Image (cartoon, rainbow, N blue to C red; front, top):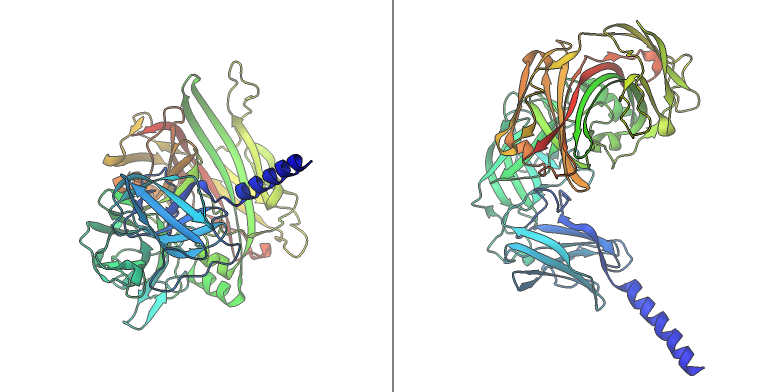
Length: 559
């Protein structure tokens, strides 16, 4: 009986030890500002940078508390060790908790492939793979997830530094401070905190696709984070102006800032106005939505399957309510892609996701009624309500039947050029209802991607030129692309006026994408958006419109 008892006690004790052993999430060691996946080109860790480690049982089950300076090598029983090329160094602890740890990777850490372990109360995790490089910058963001609006300060004087937001824009020619981490190593004792001084690195800042003048790049004067000080270039404006920092061949996460000629609230050429933003700030809420009618031509090539061509007419709509805080933190707040004319932004994506998703800010869905009616030259069809307040429908076309593959029957085309009426009957119900609306939209000549057939391989280091004709001459052209390495990937979206006829995606944008894997091809799309037709005041929305979209998508290889 004693033998059985000892055996059971041993099993229980072993189970307790296993439960308490720290575990690091796959891909869970990242730059503490960008959170870029280790599988992406900018997923390496810089010497001297703030890093974040995610997992379980990494520390005590409590709210993280920042360590005081000088930073310790152990906090509340947690320590972090990094080993590269046979040399082990202990990281300086910033904070610890059960699910997340933050630490400073010492500047003396060797460069190269290595491992990282977390030890908590004498138990050590399995090693996680990392890559240590001299510089790999990440920009802090308002949503604290590495995406959307970055953390910038508009400098009015040495003592008047205001956080950049949609209603507190910078102006062209103004000095702005970027907050981030990963510029590179310092020679001072970083455990003691601030180590200011301009670093001798090859750094560039692109704001709205324009090169900015940089006056400082180094540690901040307060702590172990970094600052980049630049001047906003002339000719830049908008609510979601993309900003990226490039050091040698490594680019940071792409973030946005707001720029307006006279500071204050920004105005977006394809969406929000300063007046609407000021109203949202006063009320504390923002009700928005959009309806898209889209014709898409696709040419896909898959290994072992062959080529598939299709033409699809579809409709989609969604309506949301944001708090003003959510609006400030969001990536476009449902008003469209977060970028500006003549510029591009990059977003994290799962394998071949072609649309950037705001997974951090979750708005309240609004009810626009059971269906949205679309009436045009080919009759009337309906977008039906889905879970979460969105509306979708395939209106025509589809993927043709493929031998051995179920489904795929194509239907007659629906979204031909011509006049359309879009309405939601008597509207929705409840406190979060969208009122009745009835709007007219004309679908113009469809966009023609003129060098589509000639674009098979995209050399990331060379940039990518795209040409087109047709479409709404007063509208916009979006160029989108994605590439993935396994289940991790990144995509880009660029915006240009239809009348320009062409756009070149810069090499620094493509540098943020991984090379295409052999089994999962990359995606490239070129679409024309018409100028939105705004919904009437009866809808009860602060900003909402209807757009017609036409364009093409194909598989490409990113090299």
